[in-house]
Amino acid sequence: MNTHSRKKPRGVLIAGNWKMNHGVAETEGFFSEFIKATSNLNKSDSSELGVCVIPPLLRLEQASGLAKKSPFPIAVAAQNVHWEKKGAFTGEISGPMLKELGVDWALVGHSERRQFFGETDETARKRTESLLEQGFRVILCIGESRAEREANKTTEILTRQLLGALPAAGQGAAGFLDGRLVLAYEPVWAIGTGLTASPEQAEEAHQVIRKLLWDRFGLEAAARTQILYGGSATPENADALLSCANVDGLLVGGASLKAESFAKLVAAGAKVIAL
Ligand code: 13P
Image (cartoon, rainbow, N blue to C red):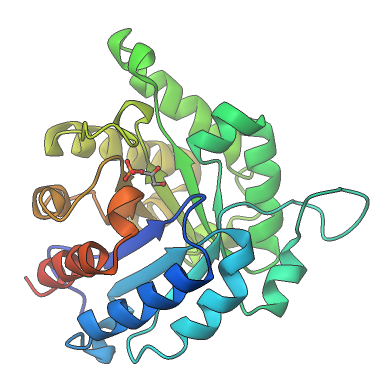
């Protein structure tokens, strides 16, 4: 087993959320280019450096097949999953359906789901609880809007969204303790806007989140949980963001769509774990 990087005790995770982008040909092209561009990565680093691609639902099967061709492990995650395992929920998909495709990672509570599709803290909690119970790794997204930040409500919003979406202490706690829960701090004002949180703003918010985990679930959960930053992350600002002590990786939208820039973001992750 590798000794963990002193700078990054939880390793680094670089995740690319494609949102509603990339058809069949683009997915094929992305993986063949990305696998070439990351051929210098050392497989033995994969206990510290995680790479995850989050394509649209219809591309999950193709993406998980293509990901298997990569010598360096690439996880594939779903952008949304229902909390029930089956039933009369037209238009939805379930955890067991994803598992049949070999997909056992899922994003929960993305701000676009909250803004456009009625996701609430309560539905995010149902998804998180159910998916952790089903053995998934969950990337739970939280973050304040511009108006909330300007009104000095960032900590209040992060507290409400985080505690509202996590299983009560005791239940589902295994998901925290074994590191299967990943959090993503995604300030809404930074998503797709080209405005990135400064490293200081990101670190401050990540500290708030880690302290909340500590207060509510204990030191071990707080120490183990990776907290990613998301919001206009690019190869240009990745080094500065990843140098923050409490930033354990990046959740990337726009800059994850092109293999070349996503590979650069992964290279930034590899660089910081080598320190
Ligand atoms: P951008 O990187 O395009 O700002 O998107 C961030 C995001 O929403 C990732 O989930």
